[in-house]
Image (cartoon, rainbow, N blue to C red; front, side):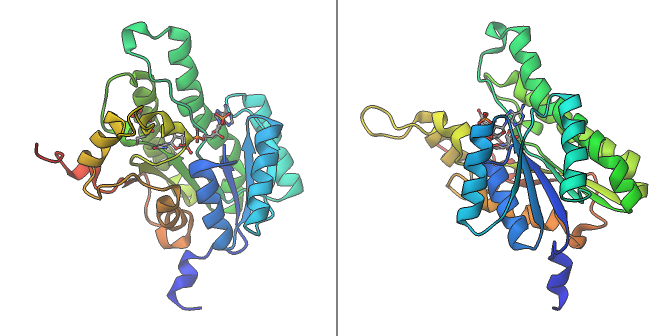
Length: 266
Ligand code: NAP
Ligand code: GCO
């Protein structure tokens, strides 16, 4: 193997949270192809079973666990169990996330807190649980799944934007605090990706035409398409591999160019 060995994840153990389907599944599948052993969790047994089956269908033996990433005790127990049953986690992807699209003045504080809990507090909890063993092992990669909303606002997503903006700064802070232990913490900021999370924004209208938001995204994206979860595979492998050992505290936007573009002129 030549230079490409720098991108290999052979012998590495990767935990991807909330990875039964969608973006997490695509990232974990790419890690498996690059040689890593895959561990994932999801919120209930049904999703975990669905995930294990989906990985098996592509020839990957994934280790699936039920765990709510907002529950610190459950996360600590998960990490201890993974270390015992699989080994020390070399790569963590904080992928599990939720969104609630509600105008801010109509949103309850409880709903706001729920989004912050899953999208910001949980990456803190899971990172905190894996860092001590990474320090002992002498290396580690943490990848936080951020968003366009780490940079931009829009109507109805105040809690999500607050959480994903916070996640960008948590990324920089983990880098700042633990870079000296050879731990790299970076973010991936996906653009608009076709997954169940964004399905309501792409629903066809009763007359068969595109949802107005769907047309809006096409006009905002130089690539003139939605992303696919697979578009995140290459960047995610790069940030998990030795090829990125001096890349730290960075958010890599994988957005078809949205952040570079003012939008299609009328
Ligand atoms: P998704 O389809 O909704 O998948 C997220 C996964 O996380 C689901 O399996 C979900 O379970 C799980 N989850 C939710 N709360 C959890 C908890 N407390 N503990 C454990 N697992 C939990 O989302 P996606 O579109 O693939 O997004 C994955 C990540 O990318 C999220 O962080 C999202 O914010 C981010 N992102 C998405 C896009 C996009 O355009 N799709 C763009 C930028 C960033 P349930 O099915 O039960 O909810
Ligand atoms: C929304 C979307 C976004 C995307 C994504 C953009 O309602 O605007 O759901 O927030 O999911 O995070 O990068």
